[in-house]
Length: 123
Image 1 (cartoon, one colour):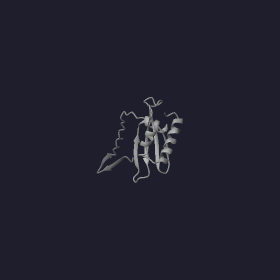
Image 2: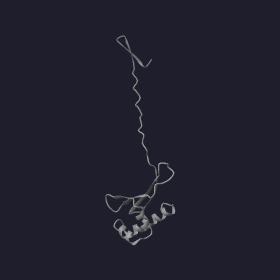
Image 3: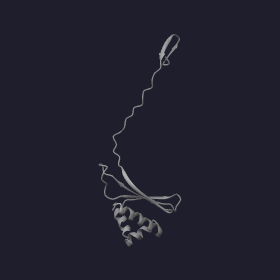
Image 4: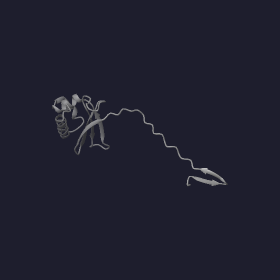
């Protein structure tokens, strides 16, 4: 047998290593749905999180914004669905506020992205 060895007349048996215990914690993950759009200057990823039933969504959504005009790229997380709606509707105050984050061309792309999200029923 390969699992035994004799040394000075005494037989020894190879020990088997115990299998590592696989203990998982009881965690509750949250799943989500995302939509992504980017151009050469900016990137927007909108994220909707499912409720615990994994069938319906929490109200609103978040956007991960990336400004690719800076090195390193600047990332921000936005979570104000009311502001998203205002930008989509071309509200002057919201557009002025948005100009602090991106140029006019970027705002056109952002509003077009929001338009696509609206078509998907995100608002």
